[in-house]
Each structure stands twice: as structure tokens, then as C-alpha cells.
Image (cartoon, rainbow, N blue to C red; front, side, top):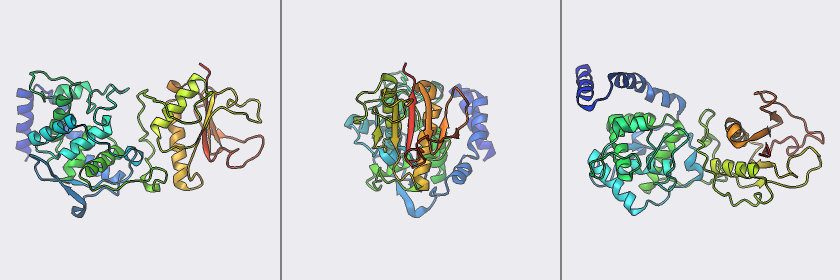
Length: 358
């Protein structure tokens, strides 16, 4: 086996113009990937009884493991229909690279909703399948036969994704699928979202109630939703009367956490210093806040806002009787409302976010 790996590295270096340092680093980093994912995700399924057999034109017939926990995006954003032109590309790439078309569709759904949200990410990822330019330079292929490799071309993007998965070991069984998805995006919840969507497109996934997520399906700390600055209208009744910064903050939080259905905005408060009457504060109500799962979800919202505080012009955050004021300290301090300690006054049932006025 060692001579085979050495020969492969030599071929890629000589004929593919790929630096040997990249290949060596990849071999070192990918080796423990499966063990690390299993450690993080005990629900990870290597169980042959929960395997989706690959179907569709030209696929190799290997199976996809079932999704595990935690999941994030797929809890609140079901698999969307695939445009006919994109479906054709998934099938063509699947046939060319002998991978399940459902896996490609799962990635396309998780990344850009099959091109519906095709924007360059804050990290610089581009195209329908969200390639980083460096990765595309190494693994990008000409998918439509026009003689060029274009990171923004849908055919090139989808065929390149299939090519990258194959180079990452996707055809080496269920462990290979997990290893390849880890190489694509080093996030356990991302992997589970992709597999959930893949099973959805095969007609064998269940529907999750977005308003009542299971506790063990909540994303874990350290794996917060991304933020690319795309904050569409939320259609929340709390939007009217908000200043520009608070309005954008409401929309951005709602986009990151679609399962939040109750939001408070501008309105009178008994405390003169409150930012609500001025339209500079938003309350994000947390369902089942008194449960461990609800409290953990509330802290995820709070930590996401904290992580993006500068971009969102956040003045301070209050949740679970704790307050974070970035101009004072980077630590969360105990919070006591002057009028009492009820769940609402202590901000245990909602995440309060105040914004600067410009």
C-alpha cells in the first residue's frame, strides 16, 4: 500500500503540478479525520443497516451512511426542489466520477440551495458548491467542455466537487464518505446536514419539526452558523420602528437561526435607559427556554451575536442573567434587573441585543 501511495503522489506532482507539501500535509491531516468525527459524533452511523444505497445513472453503487447528530441547517431548512438544469449537472457529474448524485445534491443544498444563494462567502468561498480559490485551483475541472475552468460556472463547480470528493477518498466505503465530507468542510454538523439532505433526495429522510428540535440535535459550541452578511427581510412584526442597525441585526439573527419565531422590537419599557423605546434593541424569544436544550440554544444565539458583534454594531447582549458589554470586558458578567428576577426580567427566556445607533 505504501508504494501505491508514493506512486500516486509522484504522479500528481509530476503531471498535476500539485506541490508535494500540500499532498504530504493532506495525508497527515486526513488520517485521523474519521476517528475524530466519531469522537465528536457518537451518533455517527457506520451501521450497515442504516445505509443509503447509491442510486442514479452511472453511480458506483456504494452506500452513504445515515446522518447523525448534531445537525444545524437541516433542522430548520428542509431540502428544496432541485432546478432541472442543476439536477442534470448532478447526474452528469455522478456518472463521470461514480459517486451518488444525492451526495452532490446534498452538498449543493447545504452550500447555496442549488445556486439560489450563490454569493461569495466571508471566507472567500465561491460558486454553487462554494470552493475556495486555492482548492479550486488544485481540484477544479472543466465540467461543460468549453476548455476553461470557471469557479463561478455551475457545471464546473459541480464536476469539481465530485472530483474533489473522489480525491478525498469518498469511494472507499462509509468511512471514506465521512472522511471526504470532513475534507470538504471540517464541521460535524455540516456533514450531518449534507447526509440528511442526501437521504431526503432519495425520499428516505424524516421531517424535523423546526419549532421543537430534539435536544441532542442542537449544534454544539464551536460550530456556530456562518455569517456572510446576507440578511434578507425577516417578515417579523418586530421590524417596524427599528433603527437601521437594529433592523439589520434582527434580520441577520433570524437568517442564522430560522427556528426563532417570536421576536420583540420597539416599544415602551419601564426603565428609562432601555434601548427598546428608541428602536435600538431586539428580543429573541427562546422556545422551551427552561429546558437544558432550550437554554443551550439560547446561548448559541447569544454566542453567535457575540462572535459577529463588530459587524452587527452590537452595543451589549443580555441572556440567562448574564450581560456582555464589549466596551467594558470580553467576559460575561452577572446581570440583575432593578425590577426583579422573573424569567423575563432576568432575560432567561430571551436573548436581548442592543445596538449602536450608527
